[in-house]
Each structure stands twice: as C-alpha cells, then as structure tokens.
Image 1 (tube, rainbow over the protein chains, first blue to last red):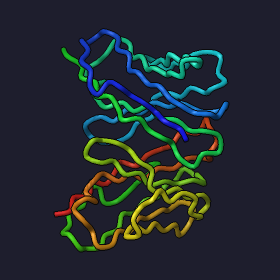
Image 2 (cartoon, helix red, strand yellow; image 1 turned 180 degrees about the vertical axis):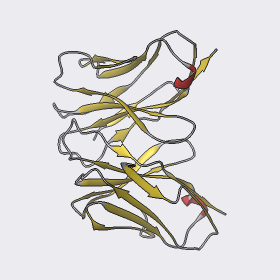
Image 3 (cartoon, rainbow over the protein chains, first blue to last red; image 1 turned 30 degrees about the vertical axis):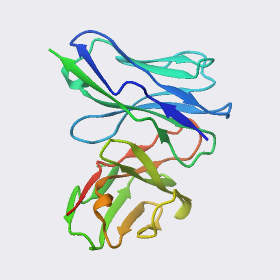
Length: 114
Length: 114
C-alpha cells in the first residue's frame, strides 16, 4: 500500500521569498509518479508539477520545482519568489503503476504575507 | 470549454433525502473518479471507473451508488443522506492509469446535510 506524509499543517512565508513543502512517501513499487496540486480558497484542485520515479532530473515548472530524493523517499515542493496568490493548500499525491487512483497526503496550508 | 464539470456546485439538503451529483468530462479520458474531501481537507478515493466499469469501491456505504452511462459521464447518487455525508465531492478523470498520469479535477460539489 502507498502512503503519503505531509508533516507541515501550515506555513507562513514572506512575499518574494522561497518556501519548501515537505512530502515523504512509502511504496514498494519501483515505478511510481509523484504529483503536487494546489487548492486555493475557491476550492478547485490545480495540478502543478509531476516527477517520475525514474526521472534523473528534478522537475521544474516555472516557479515550482520538485526536490526529489529517491533514497530518502521524499519529493519536496519548492515555490520560489512567493506571491500573494500562492496562498493555498498544497497536496502531494502519488500513483503506482496501473493504479486506479491517486493517493493524497494530508496537505499543507501556505499563507503568503505581504 | 470546461474539461471536467460537475453540477451542482453547492447542494444543501435535509437528512434522509436522496440527491445526485453529475459529472462530465470532455477530455476523452477512459478513467474517472469520485473523491471525498472531508472537513479536515483530507482527500479520499471513493470510486474509480474505467471505460464505464467499476474498478475501485473504497469501502463506501451502499447508500452511495455511482453510475457511468458512458465514458464521459460519472454520476454519484446518494440515498438517505446523513449528517456525516457533508463534505466536498470531487469528480476527476485521467487518460489512463500509468504512474505518470495526472488526474484532472472538477470544481467540486459542496454537500451540506442539515
């Protein structure tokens, strides 16, 4: 069974600074995908970034980057140059091979201060 | 234009009533899901469908009955609503079940049982 752990329930970050959101996972599958989603106060789920277990390089998408440490089973999201609009809940998720679901962590709330 | 759309967005109803939430995706995906987000924001898979066939039923009470009339639609019917059913229900879809496959979410339906 897969398990996703996000240990930070809430974080504050100053505008224009970087913030790192922790995610650790547990799986016995050698092939898996890791995803991050953003859920603003309006409620929708927005896909941010993906990292594959066999990817040699860390994924990046604009101001989002993923610090993937396979041996430690961690996939931390880094948001650079935080903006007020980054205030939201962020979820780490995982899918194994031929898995009919994404499994989600408990989420981390980020509040960006002006 | 919306990729995954679900209706209604808000649903307030009394205990004991029966209600339905509709979901449609225009992405041509084979796989569709229902997730429940509880008051602590935890996202839990309820059902997964692939090509109209039920694949996952994650120990959901029998009062919840999904129906997929075709690949593009996955509706959720709930009988005899209880206070504990109050939550946000998300429909989602994906183009397959490979590990690198993200899920695309609808905007959610906030169900309040009074």
